[in-house]
Length: 112
View: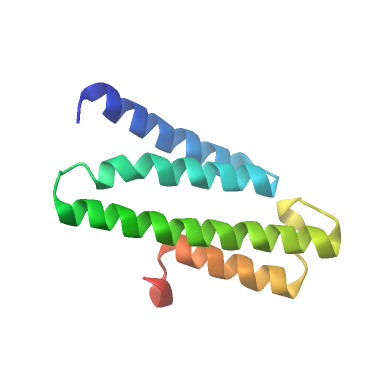
């Protein structure tokens, strides 16, 4: 990987993490997580080997499913509470869906 591409990938990772941490709105948090997902894919598939491409594809599919679940959770929360604010997660179904989505994104024990 050439130095410019590596610099862009690493700066995209930092940008996505900063956006996710500093967001108060569900859509901005989701945007930061998606930037991180798209920035890590070239680093995963860096060695041009079929197993690296397969790992990157599996990672992308799992992260896309978790992102969909996160968006569904935030939409459900907005439907029941009328708020898109992260701190207003009060509906139990939304809380369960969000916990599941974040667990999948982090790769916690049942989802690894």
